[in-house]
View (cartoon, rainbow, N blue to C red):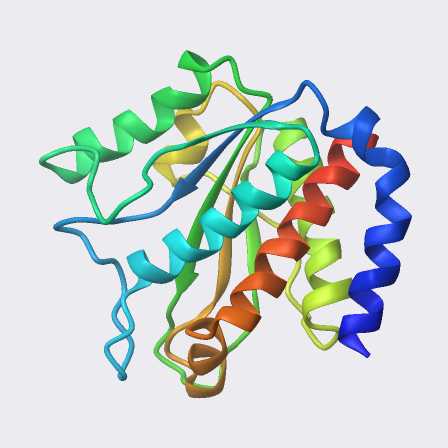
Amino acid sequence: MKSLKMGLLTTAVCALVAMSAGQKIVVIDAGHGGWDPGKVSSQNHEEAEINLAIAGLLQTYLEGAGATVFTTRADDVALGDTKQTDLRARSNMPGDMQADLLVSIHQNAFNKASVRGAQTFYYESSEESQKLAEAIQAQIKNFLDEENRMEAKANTSYYLLKQSSTPAVIVECGFLTNHDEMMKLASEDYQQKVAWSIYLGILDYFAR
């Protein structure tokens, strides 16, 4: 069913691709890396590695649609020697590249193992970031997980969202503290579905 749905969605968006993604510039940030692995699951899956895999797939989809894509990292590296310098480098890139938007890929964690589901965050005073977050969250529900009850959520504390000069979102793709979701996130098939959902949301945002 999901494979058929992907095919139908692909057909549906093809007519919009030239208008919505062509000539657009997107920065994709794979969170963490290098000395900062991010969250580490009970099975020793590092968030940084999963982030990088999903970011690479998203880059492929967007470039296939005609967008110009820059990534904050393509390998297991950090962008600074400290957390502050690392985050500053990530937040500066969209402005330096005159990007149309920034999408940062992350994985979530919580002290209750039952909590699951992807969620998209935006800076609360940015109307365009909210539109982007809501478009991505809608496609996460439509394509990735119809049982997802999460909503796009405003935030005032995430440095990357506060400092970005362009519309920006953080996509927490799932919870590494939920065993079933963690196992999915570590699989290439599910990573493709996550990236495709984000891609469809970006196309939807551009098409509007």
